[in-house]
Image (cartoon, rainbow, N blue to C red; front, side, top):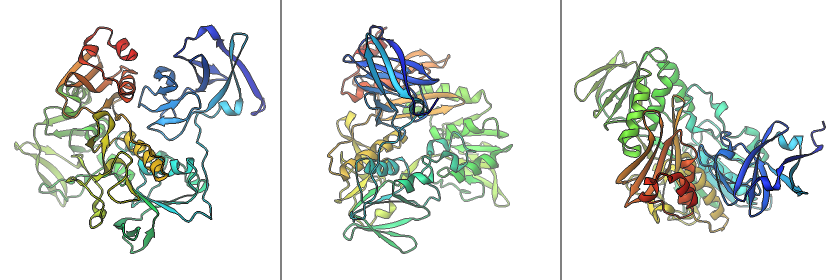
Length: 531
């Protein structure tokens, strides 16, 4: 069959689907999502453009479907991505209804594409403006792509001190042996095709907002019309004696992930920190290192964010794979043998053999280069932005982990959130407002962690929660946790309970409250679905 030859295939009868319903169909071996809303049928690709999750298992609200795994959202009328993570939209297919039969009209070529890149403009010689983007994380990349998608024809320059093109940083702690090129978010040709310059190994040392230019470590300058600061965060350094020895690692770049994976093989590994990065590294190394020991200050891992019960489950999961835990303590000293790590001494005097130490004790925003400028930062170094991602200086924006921004679901309470998904959303909003679209940030935080093939999903903002309502069975690793504040759900986490986290995220996004009474009810899933 010619790839462009049109195919017409009946999917179902018109009366087989109700309003607000979605179903998966196979067409020429490809998965298609058919949706009926307000009497109108529409069809898009069924695989989420992020990691390929089946959208038919997700949540449909009006013309918007939310992925069950990581919360990305797509418009089912046109396939456009509306919420992140992920960069691409879905393919959209023509649907006809004749004599009560619902048919898809497409071609083999159209069916073979699981993702769709939105149409983009190119640079015009007549447009003398320049957008400079410091950073190459998701906020930076989404900003650059959104500018082109919205018709911007000026120059776009992304600059980074990293040696790589934008890559999927979430995989650094989950697939530590992955080559950098294998986790690139876009191939090199993409940037060339869309006139987006990417300058690697180019570190910004200062910003002069009066002259609208940035200065680089090599002494050169770059003029900007508008500037986005999307530099992310850096690992917090350890301060104890012995902290500068060989084989002490931090995780920010692919080379560091690869080096940890290589050095840990068959060796004794000590991981400082029991939050998400530390736990994911421990899970990855569990069957590769001779021993893995995790040190944490709290009673259990994840305690501050997910609560003690889920922390216990995560700790048990890793213990079964031989990971050792030393909780409610910290490192007092790292001892050496010929300049290399030999053992770690805990505050209580416990001695742990160590050939490799990995520090995952938190992060700080990368904003040191704005000192001396008029860009305002908070006490932790996060850059203040408003709901349009604008800093205190005209034409200077900030996005991602480096930004302190007003969170819509918390009535504008200012937060600094280091989530992959939120950085994407920031980048889009920054771009739209550079183009004077006046679109505020309104995104519900969503993140996930993976441990030994088990995923924990989380949506909302649970800081300061006062109560947790648990559903399901912790022992069977199928559970839900609702985090409440003043009898209102502010966040939810789950394992093996899809798509409830996406359902709650969508409910919060629409501005509706989920109460303690709702989640205590036996049919709580139906109640939340009808809110």
